[in-house]
Length: 216
Image (cartoon, rainbow, N blue to C red):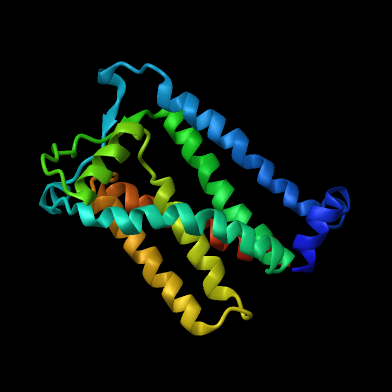
């Protein structure tokens, strides 16, 4: 709570004492670049469609919109928690895995445009189907591999699992949520199995790099 109080009463002093918080400036840069990628015109012949036979076997379950949307809580929540209540090392580790993964994704999307062709029309008007249709209207199925939704979820889980100051039951709850989020990307056809596996592998690799070269 002391950090939060300092931030409001003396923001310059807070930044001076916690200069590493400036890593958060990466987020607006990322959002601007990703938005530009989503809006750029790419000939259909140049877009690599990501799909495996198993993707067609996975049913569309609109109720999985709920765990998918929970990402919008745990992503900013994790950054806020580790900045104000966590250690400097844990905050930097999270930023390294998160932002490192996002940077890799931006590079991949730029030089290798990819997308999905898995979405089937949802005719139902129930709450979950309506939510999924809304999501699809604002999030076109392109620039999907590796999955940033998955890579960031796994990044958060990896850092949380290593925290000694977080109780085990809270770690387990977070891990269950992380698993559901990753599954949800496939059950509402936001991502292919390939996207999910590569998003997971990317965060694990960055975690190993952090442990090997930056932990100390």
